Image 1 (spheres, rainbow, N blue to C red):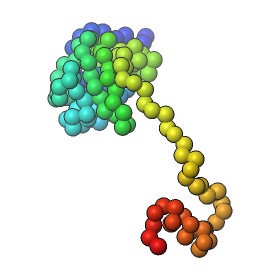
Image 2 (cartoon, rainbow, N blue to C red):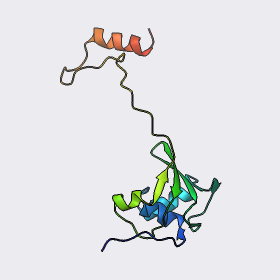
Image 3 (cartoon, rainbow, N blue to C red):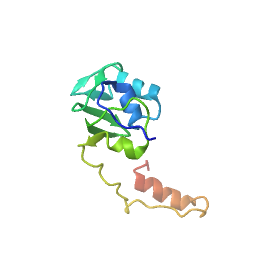
Image 4 (cartoon, helix red, strand yellow):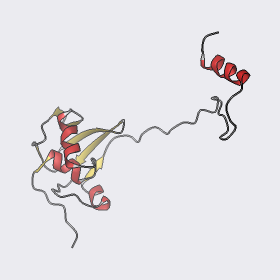
Length: 128
């Protein structure tokens, strides 16, 4: 029988952990204590209660998530159910750009020669 989301108040650290925004409950509590999690725009404590309709901002993996709470869960749930408990209003992260102007040595080509090393140092802005 799958766990169904409910609308009871839940601790913010437990909610962040249960919707899979943190790997462990203690990691979620540490993030809240460090100020990486804000409830309705304000810094909070791990024991603060979350109810549907609240806005939770989480700084995670160099990206800010702006979550609107749709349902609360107190136990960790699977990813498909977790995604139904919030709506992420944050813009998607920018795409990682490949820099073609940076020279790349082929793997297995061995150590650079003295001439190649000087060219790399000159390109990188090294001395001489």
